[in-house]
Image: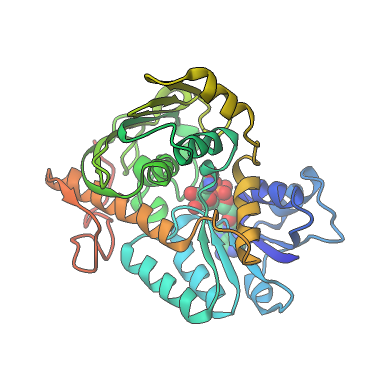
Length: 361
Ligand SMILES: NC(=O)c1ccc[n+]([C@@H]2O[C@H](COP(=O)([O-])OP(=O)(O)OC[C@H]3O[C@@H](n4cnc5c(N)ncnc54)[C@H](O)[C@@H]3O)[C@@H](O)[C@H]2O)c1
């Protein structure tokens, strides 16, 4: 049984809901938020047992408890590094919401701290988990796909002024980035989870939707190490929220549904090219349906913490996502193609915040 303290009751609410669906693996003795009333409301509405899950606003007291194994950080991005480091140094495993931290330097420091403490550090990428992505992976593993050719991703979501009515959102200091960092990061993680590492990329970013400091539109081209090519189109100015993936392999085209936040759900189409569609359909009919989103994410983490599985998100996945963000911002600012991987001599290794921040007119 893994004993969890959730820190932050915003998205922390959905983490709690997922833990409650995994009662053989997890118990949540603490929900910590500076806004104790918000945390108390979450306990009531998620029907958590108040005799089991206690509300507090005292993070130091949570860390001092030796009956907590895992600190689950659901705080605004600018707090992730310090709180994760403190928790690792206190000997806790750490789950940290995306974006893990705000620079490759900080990611490397946290990964080193986790290794030194012998603790697990896991960034949250829950989009990977669920039945349709599991089907795609199974088709690839069973040889139905063949060579990857191209992929396209759309992160076309809607965010209006009310979304930015929150002191940390829309600013470089508070949010640490825009739609590339805060919204498309999941879909880019999924791209890499399916097609492997990126070799180089080229990007444009723009602020065209809301009056914010950070970007809310982007167009990115990727060359994968496999030779496959991919494109990512991002906006927060769509009429509604949709995410769409299309993967074309030598022998298979896989197309997602339009569900924005659970791309592994809905109904994907898997169409074979020059092969037996009936055989492919029969193969898919025999596939299990693993749990979706946060439940799948935490189930895989529980397996990893029990040394019993390799499907969990690992700290290097968080670093890779930030490497991508660093490369995208560097490419967009300087009009250059950027080669990956990025090491300590990369231009934005210490952070991607612009030297001057302010509202763009
Ligand atoms: N994985 C996902 O799909 C997903 C979705 C939404 C948000 N997020 C990420 O989750 C993080 C939090 O986002 P959110 O939307 O929940 O933000 P939020 O502002 O709604 O909630 C953050 C909470 O943290 C509390 N808080 C702030 N400082 C604190 C401290 N020092 N100690 C205790 N509590 C403190 C605040 O009172 C607030 O209730 C962000 O990094 C965001 O990018 C991830």
